[in-house]
Length: 37
Image (cartoon, rainbow, N blue to C red; front, side, top):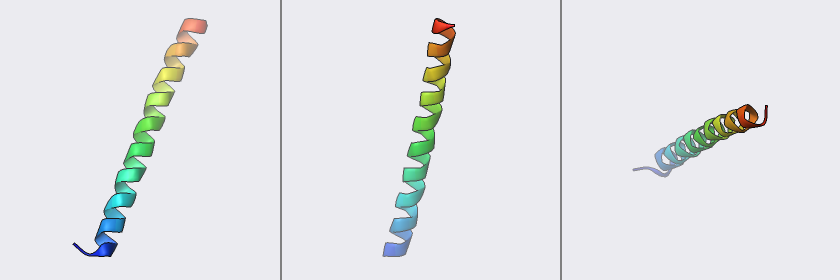
């Protein structure tokens, strides 16, 4: 695999990971908000 393809793949994985973490954080905040409300 070429370096360019590896970089593109790595960037995609990082972006997916970040968005997955953000989704989990939003869910967590929603739960905490529901408990505290």
